[in-house]
Length: 106
Image (cartoon, rainbow, N blue to C red; front, side):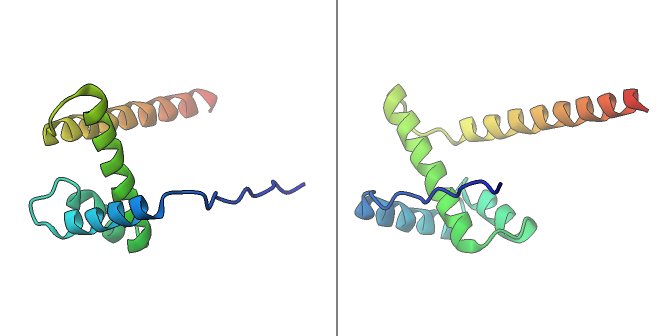
């Protein structure tokens, strides 16, 4: 039986979404933005549609702003770089674990 597809809610703050998308557009176009490389990576290397990549950047920005507000901290782009490095290391470890588990089955 096919899975039922749930529709996304249309009950959201349209002004907030528009504002975040405009902010994402500005960040994407800024040459020195820490979010720009992620956008370019998604669109050029992974083939993600530009409008979807822009929404992803807007979500990242919102998550960053929320964390700053919650912790009472100022923006620090190095935190994003450290998190990206940690995710890359974790992905490498997980890939090596999958390779090792596959080799034991043979």
